[in-house]
Length: 215
Image 1 (cartoon, rainbow, N blue to C red):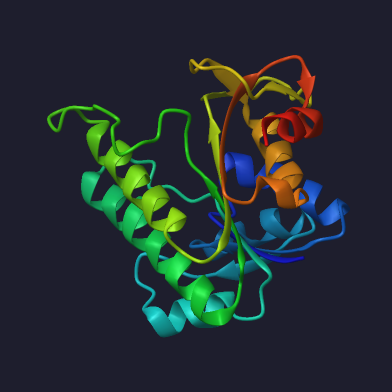
Image 2 (image 1 turned 90 degrees about the vertical axis):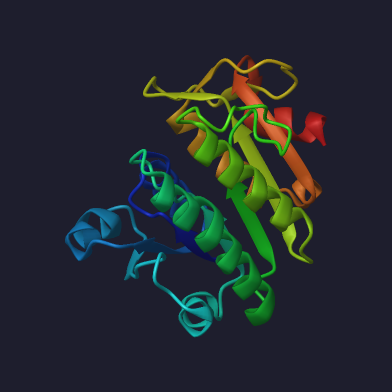
């Protein structure tokens, strides 16, 4: 597949890029800062410089045209509610609408374990903007005609990846970023994950087997 990976310099994305390339996929890693180009290209991915907060429809279409799949790994990540709305909701939704227009039919969203419109986070808490933005983006994705999968990893760690998860847990725990990177590849290569919201922690079952059992 020819993949547009949005948020290409994130910790999970940098771990996923060489896995996707080694599996035979072409990865266009979208970054805002051109100074990150060398680090991206060291993974085997191709760096594409674009500011996803400012792209209009034509800009998104140019970015995604010719791609088979979109992986959303971007996030505002700075605690600024305005940027959170702009990136985690508005830009994400714009990318989904563009993917439909240009025929990038496979779409994989990295969300989080508790993401839901019924998240219950009070509006006066700092986490509210992120919880609501992610929930609205996920809900929009479910209503598209895309072949979508939503990944819901639990709390992210820097532990060494084991290649093993628990996709049956009902409560959030932790999962290594390296394992999340592996779940991106596993989900993309499994058509049965289309239309699924897959939540998981680190666990004891090989990732592919865990996803096969979960779907």
